[in-house]
Image 1 (cartoon, rainbow, N blue to C red):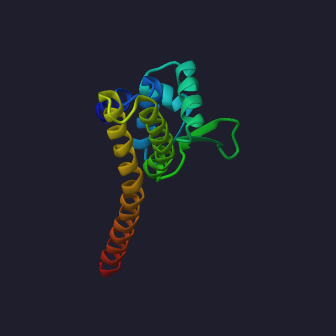
Image 2 (image 1 turned 135 degrees about the vertical axis):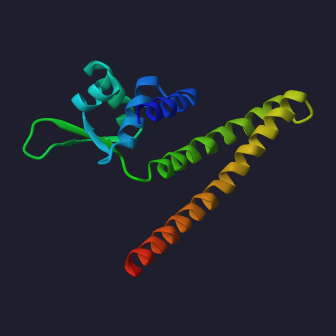
Length: 160
């Protein structure tokens, strides 16, 4: 399990996430409850409480993790924001891509469409426009597939 956590954390780090945040996120992802205390995270990952705190702060700011109070305790538990964290992340990325496309279009106007740089910037803007157009369709197909998969699992469970 720890090998998977470290491998996935390395993938997330390579994609731009802070290293400790990636490790904490991966540890929460593989926990059965999807939630752990700071002490549990520190123990599992063999990191300091301060490292956990910094990672949780970052993950909370980007809406990947939420803090909740353990019933009857003063200890906080940290859990994944929801089971659709990837869907939510891609949805937020769509907003970023829209801004990038707009900036690229403005840049292409400034550089001029006939210049090599202007052509490169225009192609980048075209790509971002394509991603914006296709991403909602892809996410809808994902939701449909997920619903169909869950319905099939429920039918199998009923059948016995």
